[in-house]
Image (cartoon, rainbow, N blue to C red; front, top):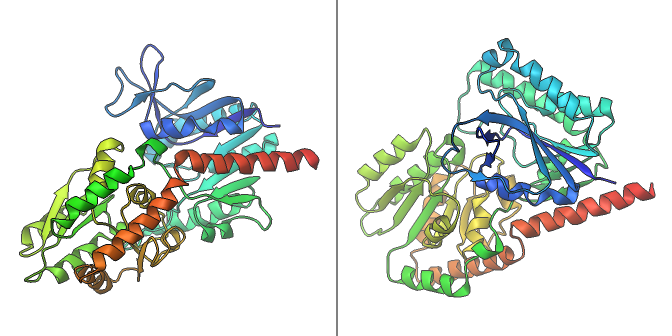
Length: 402
C-alpha cells in the first residue's frame, strides 16, 4: 500500500552551503513521527539558502527523509512576476509523479500550494489528505478588514471548501470542521498536541507549583499572539474591570503582536492588580516551567481556532478559563478541566476571575487542573500520532479489501 509519502508544505527549510538542512524544532519533531505514511518520505517545501543556520533552528536528523525545494516567497506580485510561482507549479507537478500518498496544505502565503497540488494529484491519480487545524484564511474576529482582505477570504473559503471535498481522507482538529468534507469521507477528529511525554510535569512538580501558589496572590496567564482574534481587547477590558481596591491579582501576558502597545499601556495604568508583560518563551523546559507557575491559563479567543496551549496547560496540571468557541469547547470539559465563558464577554471573564478569590475556589480550580492532567497523560504528541497511525492502518486495510 503506501510506501512513498510526499509532504507538501509552506513551512520553509534552511540549507547551508554544505547541504545540511535546518528546520524549526517543532516541525522537525512532528515530521519525525510521519513514518506511518510510508517508509520513504519526501518533503517538498520552500527552501531558503543560508550561510549559517538561523537562530532557533535545529539540524534535520530524519532518516529516510529527502528534502526538495520550492521557491520561497512572501510577496504575491514579486512571486508572479519573477516566475517563481510557475516554477513552483512545475516542481509540484513533477514531484506528484512519485508518491503513493501525499499531504498538502491550504494556508500557505501568498498562494496555497493545495490550490494547484489537489487538481494535479487528481490528474496523477495520487490520493491526498489534509489536516484542517484552523481556518486562517477567514477574516480574524475583531478585525475590520479592507476590501482586498474580504475578497481574498471569500475566494479562499470557496476554493478550499471545493477542494477539501476531494480529499481521499482528512484529519480535523474539531468536529465542526467535518462540514468541509464530502459525506462519507474517511476522517479522524485529531486535536493538535505538541508536548512530549518527558515534558509532562511530574506529580511532585505540580504539587510544588501549587504549594508556591498558595503563598502568593492569584496568578493568571495568557500565552500567545497579541492580536485581535486572540481576544486581547477582551482580556484588557476584564483587567480594567478588576482593577479595584482589594483585588491583588497578577496577570502575566506573554507574547508579541500588534496589540503589544495596548498591553504595555494597561500594565502602566493598573493601580491595584499587577500586569506583567513578558516576551515569548521558546517551547521546551523553560516554557513549561513558566506555564506551571500560573494558577489558571486564560484563553479568551474570539474565533474558531483551537490554541495548542490548552493541552500544554493540561500537561502541567494547570486549569483553563476559555471562550466557548467550537475549537475550545471540543477539548475543554466545562466544570471538569476548566470553564467556558461567552465569547467576547469581558464582564463574564472579570466575574469568573473575581470568583476565584472566594474561599474554596482554589481547591475547585486545582481539581480542574487535576482532571486536565489526566487527559494530558493519555494525549501527548506521540499519542496523537499513534491514533493517526492506527487510523491510517485501518484505512489501508479497507482499501486492500476493496
